[in-house]
Image (cartoon, rainbow over all chains, first blue to last red; front, top):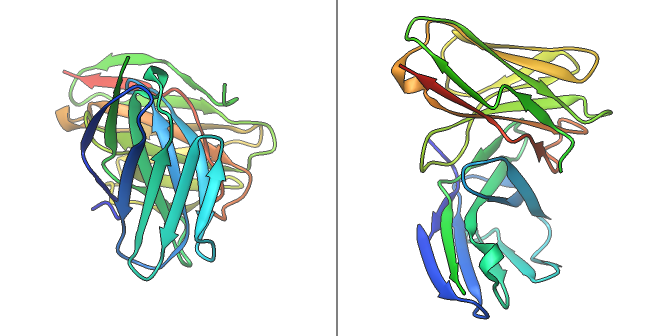
Length: 111
Length: 113
């Protein structure tokens, strides 16, 4: 079973709006990562946040991590049609060797 | 461009056959992980290799096996193919085994008929 669970499963917004995706996980983690995937191809790493960090920014991306609630959120500001993709959170368990992905959020940005 | 290449991009095999998928990692990346992604799902961890040794495995049967070579290339082998093995297979390389940023290839789409 997958550790990370994204919410919502799908999100449709207009260009220029903000998009927020959430991720919940079950065990203690070393870090949490967000990836993007276009049309069933390879995944592209967006941002990594460590367990001792609470917020991180990269360009139009803002990620928060709440280890007490075992949850994270990804905010994409001023969305563009090119942001249309699937977004996955991935967690690395404390002391573990593998990265576990959730089922993803499918984002549709309408021009 | 992630610097990770996979071959072939598409493949059709018959149930019961064997298949070998290949991955070329970034130079200096001594960790490679393989994932299976069914349509509409997230990637499922198959196994990870670190310095040519398997150092972790997901919930996949032994007919899924792998190799990692000193030249930063690796293979995923699947024996006795089943229809449910149809999926996108992704390899990801990283610098260490400490769960850092991973660089993914574009994947191999395997169809078992």
